[in-house]
Image 1 (spheres, helix red, strand yellow):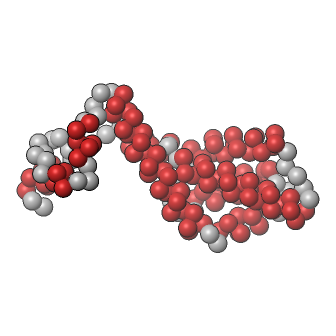
Image 2 (spheres, rainbow, N blue to C red):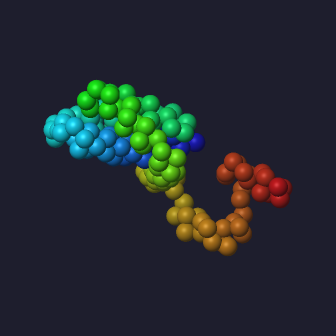
Length: 154
C-alpha cells in the first residue's frame, strides 16, 4: 500500500525523459537559429537540474511545461525559453500520453521490485494475470481491496 502512492510522487521517469528531450530540442533549435552553442557541460548541468526538478512535477496535464520554461530560461539565450515552450505546446498533448504511460509502467515495475524484495510477490498469481484463469481465482476477504466487491458479484 506504500509503494504505488510514493511512486506517483517520486518515480516520474517519463516526465524526466520528456523534460530532457524537450530541453535539448529547444537548445538545438536555438543553436540553429542564432548560432549559440550549448556546451556538453551545460547540457549535463541542465539534465541534472531537470532530474532534480522533475521530482516535484504535479500530476496535472502540462505541468511539466512550467518546469521546462523555468529551466530553459536559465540555460538558453534570453527569449528562447518561452518560444521553445510555445513550439512544444503544440505537441504536448500527444507527448503527455507517452509520458503518462512511462510513468505508470515505472510505478508498476517499482511495485513488483519492492514486492519481490520483501518476499510478498506471488509468482503463481502473476502468471495467471490477464488470463481466463484469473477470473476463477478464489479471492479471500482482505487479500485485495476489491475482494468484498468480487465476492458479492458487484
